[in-house]
Image 1 (cartoon, rainbow, N blue to C red):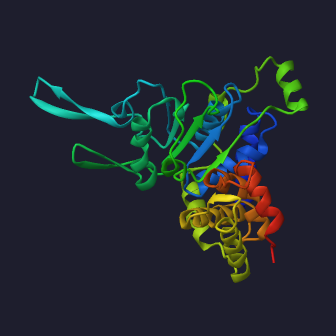
Image 2 (cartoon, helix red, strand yellow):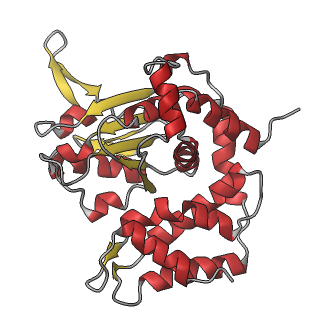
Image 3 (spheres, rainbow, N blue to C red):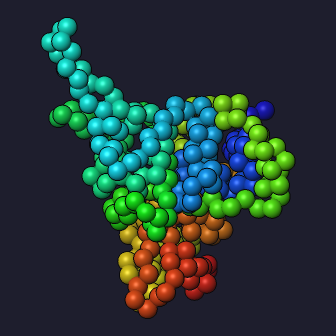
Length: 308
């Protein structure tokens, strides 16, 4: 009997959860982001498991994986690659950088300069890299997981709004709960290794999943709800910047993916609610009359915008 989409997702999340204890909701969101064809930004303190999550996701999906440690002296060529002269045949040959992979971990992305950060923009938006007048396609799927430290830490450069908007979702991992932390202490962190995780989705299943997202139905009433959410962000003094059309499309696509992960061919308002914080909080900025952050603005939306 063919596995359902929900069973495939549950098995993948369960496999990763054997390594990242107590983080099932975040793992499910990360998987949703990849299946929706987006990119993921994880903002948290060092040591929270950001790198482990990205490597585990690649391992469970059977995808190639590379990691780039972003530092203040990192150059775009260190990410994209460059042509090197070969004396033996008097020619230049292109040596691809680590960006030519299926899952790229851009670790501590906000420790590099804006010039280096911008090297990812074309790749994230168009799944290609243009160098020396030649356009080179990136592998399919191409998924960037970027991690960043809180901006109040020293040596960080804030991501510009244009770069933030390229990330379909942003989330935090946070501290483990008491039960997960006790399990970690009992084993001294000696649980499963990333390389021991089993592949749970084949490339064919992954491609089928991503193709099926487009077929998930969104009713007129559901689209009305999404538009009411967007309209509220564009009104009043609480929001300095409203949700852009790209942000609205990102919200709908994420909600469709979330519905498909639950074996449904139609979107419910609950699906929109489930992905709303991760998709919109980093796209919203508080206005002068509001003292909270992006997540507080999302909470305002959830309180004030009626589902029906």
